[in-house]
Length: 327
Ligand code: NDP
Image 1 (cartoon, helix red, strand yellow):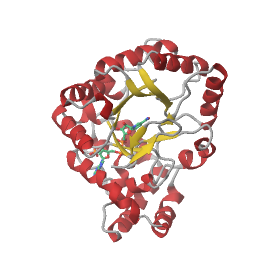
Image 2: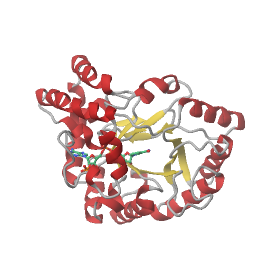
Image 3: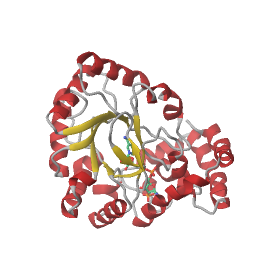
Image 4: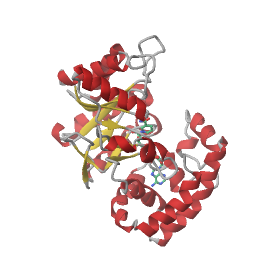
């Protein structure tokens, strides 16, 4: 495993990390979840990603039980939660980024994950209904109380991030150090262009999500939706509709066999190649892997060994295929 510095912070994060979305507490049983987390940890993964909304809190409960039973030293891993979408009902203050929900959701995550503190606590989306000062102040206070070590954002615009930093500097608050954006061969504008100036100043770590575009970049959806895949899973109809009915997504799926041919030529697999492509970007602190089977995770962890095969010539070939259809 390689470790990278998380943006402007002093934290070392594994270049490959592991997340619980769709799978833990939902698509897979607890025995598989246990094997997955242990496989990741044994390979040197030190960051496990979670959120209040994943399986309405169940993903954190499952991960917390596994962490507790593992006997791993708390100092040896990082665990996150994210606040915004909520997990209970739809009552006022049960979602969003108000001071109340940020604090309630932190306490809930600590209880479910059975830890004394969260290493990373993300605002899962921006909340225009709440002043950024209120959210930043709540995050700062949780850090001062020792319940959170670092805070960050997910899918905030560069403008929102700049405003958060301005407010934090003006009020002497702990500032966000990490953003969690989607990034893969087919989805790249925000990471590559919009955030560009932020990496240098004020500094920005990135833990990127959906490196395989929910599985599209494995080639599994090239001729339909296979049984027992994410797009076939109950509750994921919205994602299936979004992907299969979107003309831009169809162009992406159509480009996959050409990417697979490049992987073939290099003697590797498309998932490994696609993940290695994400790792190639020095502004990516960690690529969060997702898997519903242990074999998938074992394969994807092999991406580290493929990075050196991505010469400038190979990168040009990949970009020539992916860029025209990318968002
Ligand atoms: P990917 O795009 O890598 O998709 C992972 C899924 O693809 C797996 O669950 C599996 O689904 C399939 N897959 C993975 N590897 C293989 C393989 N080698 N061969 C065949 N199929 C494979 O990542 P995710 O979308 O899961 O995102 C990773 C993590 O990022 C999440 O767990 C979460 O922690 C985080 N995330 C954060 C978001 C945010 O808003 N901040 C949003 C989304 C994710 P299957 O077997 O079911 O087809």
